[in-house]
Length: 204
Picture 1 (cartoon, helix red, strand yellow):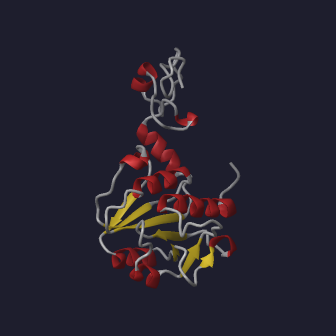
Picture 2 (cartoon, helix red, strand yellow):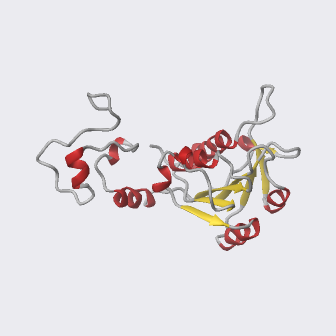
Picture 3 (cartoon, rainbow, N blue to C red):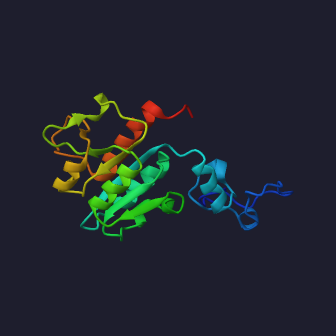
């Protein structure tokens, strides 16, 4: 936050460092983007390249049959936890507002059907793990999450489709203790991704 109350930082003091990752326009005008402090004044492509060198080997997939408004937040969470990619299964269009521009830094791939996604995952030798609190599901905090995997989330409301449950190697549940039947897909994705990070990510 600048002294004027605007988000980000103002123009960089001169002389500017000689760093090819820095954007001269941002150095001159200020950087108002929603990026971590380490990326202030960096060019967009330089940020993506740096992230690509550190991405975690888990993927996130979400079914999109009814234009789920939570998908933007799932993409934002995937960026926060540095997922390898987000996979949108079903409709190509999704509401990007919830992503808060993080989709510019996060790789997003589209698969028209679950069959297409399953074929892609098989080709990458990635086990698909469904996330839903269905009867017979296993608590995620007690499951041996593999380093390389794809976490698959269902549509807000109906949850994982029957086809998604069939292709999943396991269905994992987030343990809950209150009166509500479920938490929304965005919140569930954050919990599941953090569970992966807690076990596999190197110390910050």
